[in-house]
Length: 142
Image (cartoon, rainbow, N blue to C red; front, top):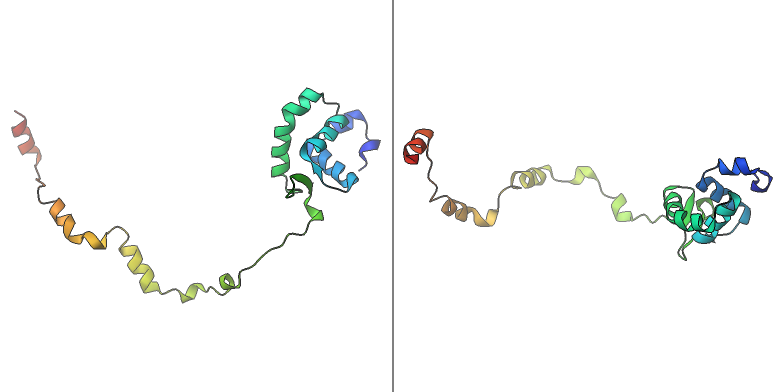
């Protein structure tokens, strides 16, 4: 798609991210976000104040669009042009779920609500507790 051959109405019907995509394809180099949005604004005849107001929204659009990538220097480019290094930790690959001891797992689940260090303290906390039934409560309220 050639942006220069499109008429004003066709350009205005395109989304900001589609326009930016085509611009970056044509330029063949990364661009700072403000410069990229100024180019988009020129294509669809936005005023300078409109560009300043909408640049934050444009940033959000590019961030959410998986076709774009922000580079270390803050410029934006097409993700297809950049190789992403994926680092795989070999230790994580060797993890086998079957190696987990099921008895240890069950013990951990059973003890989740108990503080093993303070078993004796829990009895002391309850020594002053008095249970009153409804009759006793009614009698004491008079």
